[in-house]
Image 1 (spheres, rainbow, N blue to C red):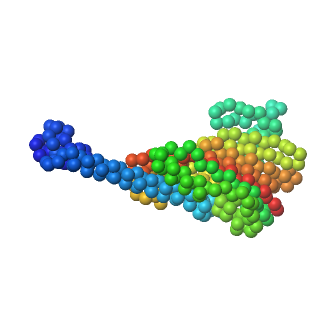
Image 2 (tube, rainbow, N blue to C red; image 1 turned 180 degrees about the vertical axis):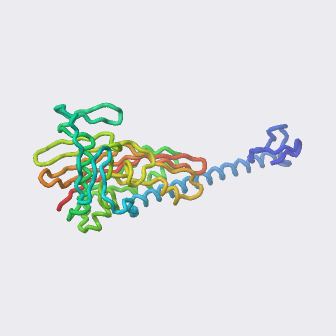
Image 3 (cartoon, rainbow, N blue to C red; image 1 turned 120 degrees about the horizontal axis):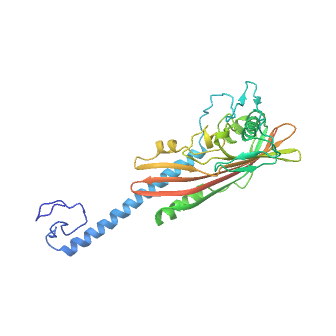
Amino acid sequence: MICPNCKRENVNEYATVCAYCEHELYQGNTEQKASELAQKQKKDKMNSIIKTLISIILVIAIAIVALIIPKPDKTGGESTTNGGGESTTAANGEVTVPNNPSNTDEQTTVKSEDGKYANTNSEKTTEEIVAYFNKNANRVKTEATKVVKNYEDREVSNIQASDLLKRTAGGVMDAAFKDDTEPIVYGTREEIVENFQVPNQTYVSKITAEDVAEATFTEEGNQYIITIRAKDEKNPTVGKGVGAAFDIIEASEVQSKAPSFVKEFSTDYHNCVVKATFDKATGRMVSANYTVRLTLFVTAFSENASMDLSFEKDYTITY
């Protein structure tokens, strides 16, 4: 609004008095005009909130779709490697595990991301654990005759946003992320490749030792129990880091499909853990429990929002 007195432009479109010379900007009934402008300001603010709300819900919806749509195979059909050492994967799928003559302690020390060491129950290095896990987990996609997802627990928490967005987005997320409580059977090769970790990839894992924060290898009767915790990672991609062993949302994929008014979408994956059981005699993975935790961040218009998500999937595998 241009002040009729000093001819300067006032940036505040809802003001009734000039910010420079304090002259009334409108002639006539100033009180009525002030009331009209106050109503307009309130309406504009509500419209802005609604637009922001819709945009963030759209992004959430895109993220939900990203969890279930097929992901392209980024391996090109190549054999996987364990990384983190001299281990290699031959054409026949056999993994050569590096010897570690320096590891002569009664219990192996495995380094975690904070630089500390923790004893494990078997003399295995991180490289050896990862190599064994990758080699035998990947056999699920080629040898298993049936995979049963026993359940999937999904949780949405710690929504950081306006009260209106919390109420609305919370309801949307709760409905979309309802738990799978009944077992789901994948009985064909195509179904197993499409649904078992990592979904729609020819591999189950190609995580490297460098991607691992902690790895343990224990023996229980006729079984080996391997637990691997991936290092925390922002905006991971399928086939690398966290995305080399866990089902993830690619932030870049969601951002590319988001409305133009969504300025940013990002993910922060943390404390992602897989605990798997292998048969000693055959080396085959017979059960696995995957827990993925992440925080979503969305910026739309002038509003920021974030929320924590977690997914726990439990599987039984037969051959």
